[in-house]
Length: 343
Image (tube, rainbow, N blue to C red; front, side):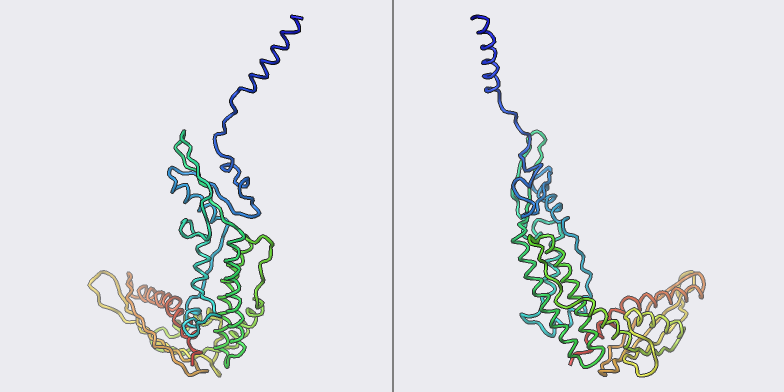
């Protein structure tokens, strides 16, 4: 009897000992390693980050969240600005607002990222480290972008209709260019919406992008620019202006031109109280839209270049002229074309 009693006591002591042992304490809350446990990935975007302060941890979690979106919109703002000033109503897109919405999706500031909230925080006393769980509700945020997509589609349809009604090639080109810019915004909004969409139902473009590209390319090739130059290095100067026209997409020709560009370049030696040779360059350019009769404000620019020889200084002056034409003049030329359809 006694022999049987000892094994029984040992078993009871073992059971009581196990029952009274303190549970193993987890170092971190479960969400630190597994945020999906609280916020399922199908419904939320989540990010956990740590930092030496609560603010630092929040900022890092927002940075991590924003990495879900990789969007970059390079717009020709001048093309959009002209039309926005002329016609702005409830049916037209507020493109600055749309671009701001896109940019705020990839910024790291907690004050900028769209519809983000801090869901959980934890402080680890042993390491003096803060942990933050930030979340974005996909369903709520998806609706914000879907509404913006609808606005861009209305504008795209409107621009495309205006292109169809335009009375001349250049006006039609400008409206189609605006379509291109709106499409860029719409595509960026759609790329974000696809990440957030629960149903995979991101709408397609309301006007086929390929149709606009093909029509725009055809019209550009049919638009002829005539270039007339005078003054110093006339041929070289003309070649620079041709590059600007080609960059715009137009053709170069002499007969029945749609655009007439007249330019004059002056290169003069300059006496300068410094060692070396110096050249002053001056250029004037006049542009006329032969279709509408509109003229661009005379473009003028000048500068000074120096080098060890007069030939080298002259070469540097020509380089400066080329840079001027490819930069500021190209922008002003396109702005003039954008405005040329105005009544």
